[in-house]
Image (cartoon, rainbow, N blue to C red; front, side, top):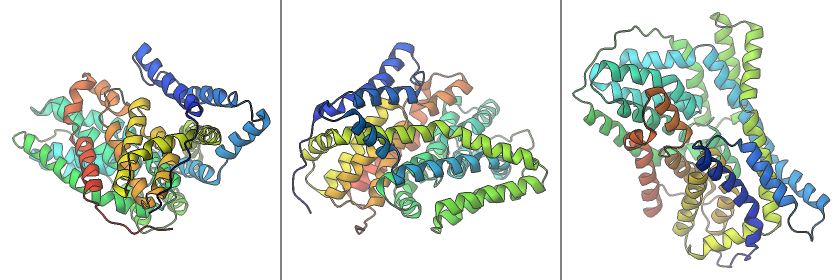
Length: 433
């Protein structure tokens, strides 16, 4: 293992990053809403600060660094994947895939396993849609219906939904967090999925058992009918299966869009023009994220050129003297950023370049570092009372966000599984150059 020290770098170069974080936290504290500050405004303010620092470098040169960072091939490919993922999710939802998936699960579940089933349904929908918030929006009304027809606390049903939503948000191959983790670490979707799966599966199983034990006496038969179509679930299954097989994610997403579109057209869910409109809506829904990726790429490059990345790596690596120490550094880094930004995608894109260099120094496999980034950002995100996920379910259930957090068992167990995986070196990988 390489033992040389990092260049000590320049701590002042991190001021733009501090501005970015301060705008997030400051606006959240002042307004009580951590999503009040538009993220693009915060990033752009940080970029302006970075551009007017380091007078030894010509302004034109700094603009060149900004565009090179934002226009890096990995960044642009990430943008393309985001746009395709948004289009697939919107088209699939438009032809009724989400409703059919939810109703299929509710139709086959026995009454005494409704909460366990709700968790499992949330897992499948989120891994299919690639969005935790989208899953929550679809299932929160169902969860409230279950709570009203049983003696199960609404906070517990909301906790089951958040838990399942974070499972898929972390594991789905079309999740923006997965895409960001894979692209920043330079690995493959299928490899990251397999590395993640063996770590998160025990957490998911234990979570299901806990929900089962807590609600074993809460039997109920839902009164409403739940019509579904197996055919409409197939696009989700197809995307998941082909992605695990290792097919290029661009092919997988384009195939999924075409498959979902054909089903919707043949079953009369939308016309040809409406299909095109759904595609546009899907792209539009990802525009802010796409711009954010480009701007963050440029910001990170400016900070790197000024020595900020070297400074961070020097500080972080001082306490890490082994492969295991490097992994703890990655976990701590992305967790700290996530607490500050309340957004796991932003935290991965921010910490990703640093994690990549840490993984290279300590010979951590790229799929392992991608997995750790996604695991710890998702676990933190699923427990933040000011995060979008818990705020969403709290709004539907008219509950305090803090009252739901204790029932979000999966994010807690996910963090524990991640820590155990680091301590016991599980699963083991051979480094790929």
